[in-house]
Amino acid sequence: MSGEAQKESKRILGPSVTTRFERARVLGARALQISMGAPPLIEITVSTPIEIADQELKEGVLPMTIRRKLPDGRHQDIPLRWLIKNQ
Image 1 (cartoon, one colour):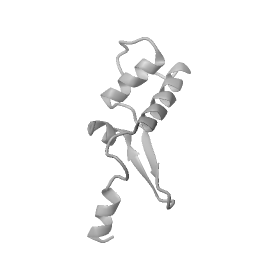
Image 2 (cartoon, rainbow, N blue to C red; image 1 turned 180 degrees about the horizontal axis):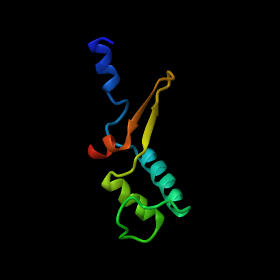
Image 3 (cartoon, rainbow, N blue to C red; image 1 turned 135 degrees about the horizontal axis):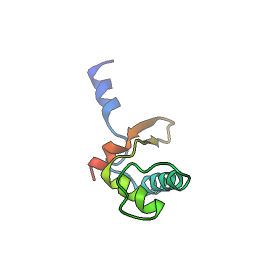
Image 4 (cartoon, rainbow, N blue to C red; image 1 turned 30 degrees about the vertical axis):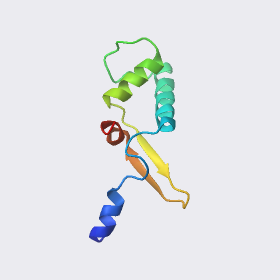
């Protein structure tokens, strides 16, 4: 792979932070997991699954990946922690 192609593959498609839609999707998915019995990844200081999921997101401990798609069919998988640290 040439140097130009490597730079292209490292660049994040779209904004360098989570969009409100990505954030809502991640919070909803994680809150559902917690409500179904998944163990929290943080010390619990709040009471509802959505609050726990929000705290996990803010602390950057969620091992999730965001898939961004373009109209031409290309996509890029971005680890959630890369997008959180930029906020």
